Every structure is written in C-alpha cells, then in structure tokens.
Image (cartoon, rainbow, N blue to C red; front, side):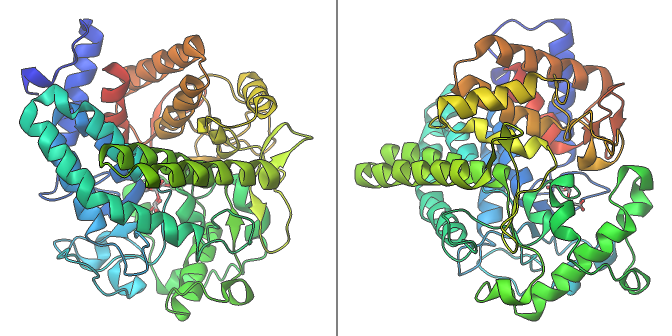
Length: 446
Ligand code: 9WN
C-alpha cells in the first residue's frame, strides 16, 4: 500500500490490518489489464465485479480502476451490450465452464480478448466510474485530470449500455430490462428465479457432455446444483441458437424475468450518468438521465411491488406473475432516491424483520428452504449489503447505515476476504481472496 493512499481518518490496528490484507488481495488478483474475481474459481474478467472492484481501487490504485473499466468496455458489443465475462486469451478453455468456445462469440471492439459471453450483468459501472472520479482529486492534480479524460471516454459507452438494456431488453414493454439468464442477475441460484426456472427444461445429460469446472475448485454444497446447471447450460444454448438476438426472444426462449435489483441498479446508473454529464458540461443530457431514472423507479414500483409482502419481487415476464420468494434483490430498490416514502418504509420493515436482519442474508432466514451454505440461497454477500448500505444513506438513515457498515467490516476482518459468508456463524464460504469483498472492504474502511 502506498502511504498516500491510506484513509485520512486515524485507523485502529484492526482496520489497518484489514486495509492491508484487502489491498494485497487486489494486488494478487490483478492480471495485467484487468482484475479477476478469484484466481482459481473465476480466472477471467466479470462485468459487475469490475464495478465493485473499481470502487475499492479508487483508494489504492485509481489508474488500475480506470484500466479495468476500460478493458471491460473495450469488449462492448456493437449493440451496446457489455458482456458478463470477457475471456482472457492467456487462460485455457478448461479453466472455466462455460468457456469461450462454448459461447462462440467473436471478439468485438479493440480488446485483444478471447471473445466474451453473450449475456449481461447489472450495469453498475456508471456508479463505479462516478465513485472513482469523486476520489481522484485526493490523489493529486494528474489523477483528477486522468479521471476527467476517462469519464469522457466512458460516457458514450455507458449510455450505449443503458440504451441496450432499456431498448432491446425491455421484453415486457413496461419500462424495465428483462434478464434472460439467471447469471445476468449476478445472483445466480437465487430462489427469486425458482418459479420461472420451473418452465425451463433441465436436461441433465448436457452435464455428461460438458464438465462443471466450479466443482473441481469449490465445495458442491456451496454451489448451484446440477439441475440448476443443466438449466443454465440449456438457456445459453437457446440464446446462442438465435445469435444472442433479442428480437422475438419471448417466443423462443424459456426465461425472461424483471429483477428488482438489476433494475434498481439500472436506475441508479442513470443518476450517476446525470452527475457525469454535469461534469462533462452536458447539462441537457443530465436532465434526460434524471428523467430516465424517474421512469425506471416508477416502473419498478408499478410492476414489482407486492403489497402483501411489503417488498419487491421478481416478475416472470412470460406469465406476468411475481415470484413468492422474498430475496435480498427485493430490498435493493432502496438505492433509488425517488422511491415513494411508503415503499421505503416497507423495504425497511422487511430488512429489520427476522426474515433478514444485519448483515442481510441473500434469502429470507425464515423460509423453509433457507440454505446457510448454498450461494445465493442464504449466505451473506458483501456486495449486496454494500448496495443496501448505499440505500440507507440515500434515505438519510445514517445510524442504520453505520451499523451495517460495522457489521460488514467485522465479518470480513474475522473471517477473511471470502466470496460469501455463513449467515449464522460468519464462516467464510466459496472462494477465498475474492476481489469485490476486498475492494468493498477498502470503501467501508475509508
Ligand atoms: C457466473 C464472478 C461471478 C459473479 C456472480 C456470481 C458468480 C458465476 C459463476 O461469480 O457467478 O457468472 O460461475 O458462478 O454469482 O455474481 O459476478 O465473481
């Protein structure tokens, strides 16, 4: 760690230790022109990971934060979509499944990559770019100048990403983006998709053709099941069969869902773009971004709120039904400043109830199928809690935001920079030395 990059507030021994270990995880996971989420489990570049990681790199190495964001957007498709994985040509097909040959996507843009996937992830990059920009001046005049130049480069690309998601991906026609694969949510095996996935054939014979690499490097009990994977693979094959086109997709693809968390991030991105447009002297554009954020917020409220549970739920676009599952994604719209007061109150009641609590697990603790180990079906994830803390701050709930911050810092300090955590014991689960946990720890300490 460079001494200039340490936070300005005095640090306790505990926070200095955490700061140093977080910075060293980010050092280890840097792969030349991008960051990997985890060396063993995820050896390529992932889209929304890049955004969370940039938030932390903003403190210790802003040049790498910009490099990482650029590397991702250099692989942006001509239609504006930003792929969920950009494959590193230095890795072999067998290092991750499904790898580049399986997706069969050519390399777009200037990135010397080995192709990408054809699906997306939550568009948190505008929020991240704004966070890196805001902190640039603390690193000196050259860093501030670099930040402005990077914003100029990124802005039209970020807008193209929004246009793709609010245009081609508005499969339901109600002003929200649909995800067409559970991986697009970033919350892969969340119970939020169970109802919609029940309509997707689970052809287990696919798994005798394709081998799951994740099981070679992680515990099976911590990962999605084979049935989940059979459906994931089947959905890629279905989307790939139409060359990843979204035209007429509802008629030929078995999964299309409006996710509250994905769409809340889509709305937050418009607000960050308004700030960025302001800095770039594009005042008129800033107003348009704010209006677009309001439309997205209204559509989330109109389409995804369940008055009976008092929180937001995923909507199956094919049936028009809201899922019954209460998941962390249903709380994330708290990030939106224009969320009506009664909806804010509902989300807060749910968050404070025995179903969730601090830190917030990925799924309702009281549900019969709450699973303390299995990925997005129970464990605590730092990125989801970080988004919720932002939501608490947006609505002026400083004390609760501080409690959540302290709980996250304690969890990571005691247990390490794991991918996710047991919601009762705090034990670290999944990949150790996980980049976004380390990056967000830096932000929580600063
Ligand atoms: C599939 C990289 C990614 C995260 C996702 C997380 C997990 C991948 C996987 O890892 O998903 O994209 O192989 O399980 O669910 O949020 O971006 O960290």
